[in-house]
Amino acid sequence: MELIIGQTHRNVLALASSRSYLFLGDHFFLRKLSVARVAGFHRTAWFRNRHDLQNDPLTLSSLEVKHKAEPEKKDKVLNLRNWKPSAKVSSSKPKPASNARSKPAGAQKPLKIDESLFSAKTFGELGLPPLLVDRLEKEGLTAPTEVQSAAIPTISQDHDVVIQSYTGSGKTLAYLLPILSKVGPLKTPAEQSSPDQKPGIEAVVVAPSRELGMQIVREVERLLGPADKKLVQQLVGGANRSRQEEALKKNKPVIVVGTPGRIAEISAAGKLHTHGCRFLVLDEVDQLLSFNYREDMHRIIEHVGRRSGTKPSNILGPLAKRTERQTIMVSATIPFSVVRAARSWGRDPVLVRAKSVLPLDSVSTDGLVPFKSNPDATSSSSSATRGAIDSLPPNLEHYYCVSKAQHKVDTLRRCVHALSANTVIVFMNNTKPLKDVVFKLEARGMKAAELHGDLGKLTRSTVLKKFKDGEMRVLVTNELSARGLDVPECDLVVNLDLPTDSIHYAHRAGRTGRLGRKGSVVTICEEPEVFVVKKLRKQLSVAIKPCELAEGNLVVQREEEVE
Ligand SMILES: Nc1ncnc2c1ncn2[C@@H]1O[C@H](COP(=O)(O)OP(=O)(O)OP(=O)(O)O)[C@@H](O)[C@H]1O
Image (cartoon, rainbow, N blue to C red; front, side, top):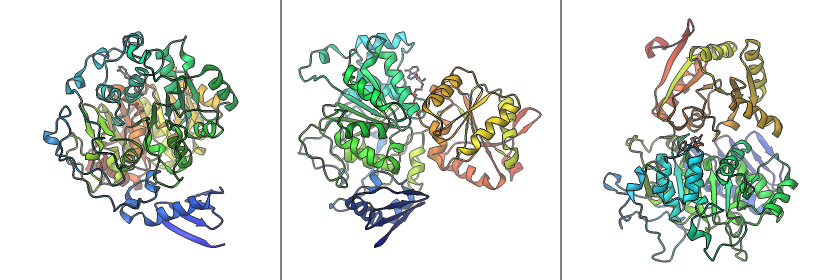
């Protein structure tokens, strides 16, 4: 058996053998991969240049087979100083990346966004149908957030979009509202009678975790109302698959929301018909591009919104080309791998941020266009770091506190008391110690519970519901809950283990300070880890202040005191 050693990529060592077993990092995938795939993976891993391998996270697009075309030219970055969203994109726009599909001349969608909409005070001003505006008002939602004001008109104009805005800024409704304006019972009158409406699934929303998937389903159900809530169907992993398939047949939903594995599984079984789909949403898209979702995501990209009869491209060939489908990618953190994927899968995708819509082609190849608040975001920082810039809510206070490993839980407890926090999410990197931390907190009279992927589906949803209802004060969890989980009352996030990078720090921190509320983030670390906290502070350009707990108070120290 001939063994080919692939390129070492971060902690992933790709071993592809003629018997097509793939060994990755510390996980051993005993999965028969087609030789083409293994060869393709190996070829890609082999050909990626050193720079990308060091900076870009291992993602679906980063493993894309190199196109025959010459390597991507370094795009110029539009001078944003005088670029106006309402103006047509200037002809001096840099050439689209070489991996963009060749489009017939004139196929570029003009980007005409009415800048005045960015300061819309009501959802009605954004052109949402009256029925939908009524439902929002019934839910107590009257004014759009900044990212919603930018995203809703842009999506309504049929643009493919990448939505980037800090955690808790309302990105979910930013994509759900324009979709519900065109799909389902709340859509605009014009859409009611449009001839090309065919019954069937018209929107697929993909989320990396069951909890986030169910959270999105509940948001859609609230807007659809009791009579029509069956028009949205969950297809999350861990739930009963045959019941999901029965519901698809019986209820004929127009929107499905699920996790990549379950959606791909039901689609491959021929029980999920999405060729007529108008919208594909990838929520927490940078996580969905990670290696473990590769196969499922590839199936979803290939099939959703692809008219029957068109031949799917080779599994490792250029990623699926967009047909009629509108592709919407969403995350608070957009590393360059997402930009590359959007260019492959979308048509003239645009980058939507609070008060800003700009062509994705204007994103430089070495990372995201600097934000106004970060004009000097240097291209030397890694793609992951650049992706985390401006992903943190504005009203957070960040601290770090040095503690010996065996005293961390006690430090955590004192921190909760010192900040009088009532709804606390504690993050750890591994599942095993979670139970022990819960036990110690409970032993000192602090109601706590653990949440992680090894728990059954019912337990996970019960724990989350009790936490949201305030029945326990501390939720001890791992990365599963870092993405997208919305607990508006969360007033404190504690890192009991250090996050692996600035993107993970940002998503954990973003569980508090939702929608502009105040919140605190405390990282409890050991002395030798302080330099990591300082690196995160620099990468995120956010003040993470040294503190200590004294006489029941959290006291901020001067930096030199800590040295
Ligand atoms: N226009 C609005 N007015 C008031 N509240 C809103 C509005 N839009 C969203 N919210 C609320 O704000 C909270 C955060 O919204 P959401 O979860 O969509 O944020 P997000 O940007 O997706 O966060 P994350 O990046 O963590 O996924 C939710 O409780 C949501 O109900």
